[in-house]
Image 1 (tube, rainbow, N blue to C red):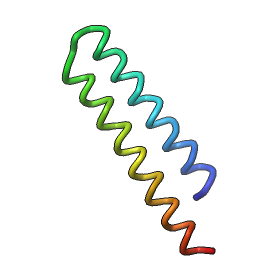
Image 2 (image 1 turned 90 degrees about the vertical axis):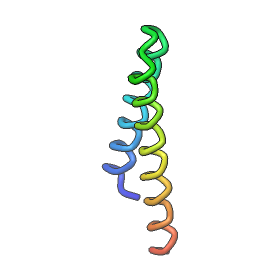
Image 3 (image 1 turned 180 degrees about the horizontal axis):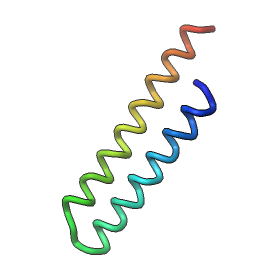
Image 4 (image 1 turned 135 degrees about the horizontal axis):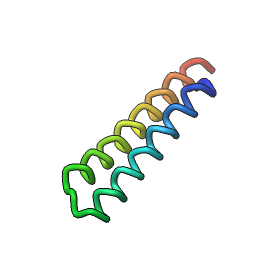
Length: 57
């Protein structure tokens, strides 16, 4: 997993956490769900990168 990918995935997850928190604070369920989706997508990308790294070794 390249450093750029790690940073990008971490930023996406952090952004998702921010959206989720903002959604909770304002009562906006759509924003909250979008934030949770962004976090899940970042986690999935990270898992895929780890699988690729495992096959490289």
